[in-house]
Image 1 (cartoon, one colour):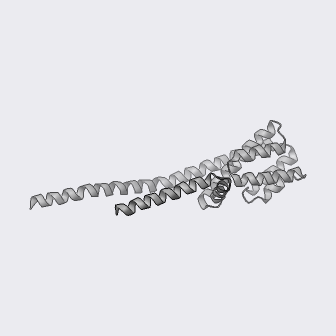
Image 2 (cartoon, rainbow, N blue to C red):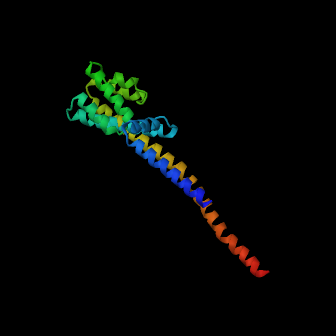
Image 3 (cartoon, one colour):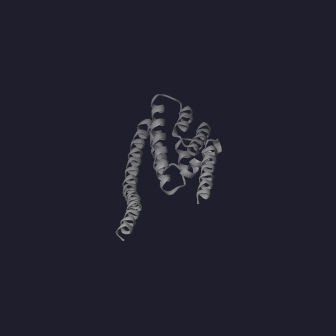
Length: 186
């Protein structure tokens, strides 16, 4: 049993090391970010966090007078998700060719439709920064609500797991004591 346990530990450590090393590569990081955007629970959190960061950063840069192309490049790097960064680089190319920013954003599967609609309104009124600040506020609140809900779900599960672990330890300690007292009594 001890020999197999050591082998299992070595194999799991090797797997963890290999995955960690792969994730440090550009392709691995991209694949990890794509995985986060496809996992059921993580998809919503990751997407909403990325939209909030995009909106806040892009709005700040636009209000500071940075050009749209430079703002898109900086914002893409600040989001922290390589998949969305790639989409923003592609959007920058389309903007460079004369399209409105709301057009490529509307075709992106990772940006909700409301973002492109609000961008379109901002482009028409000339107040992209004001509109995107409101979008950022909305999505930051959404992320907070999602995380609070997740914590509310995880908390009872952790209590049950810890209670089971304490019960197992108590049974492990009390079993031999009961057996010993039974043997002494006979």
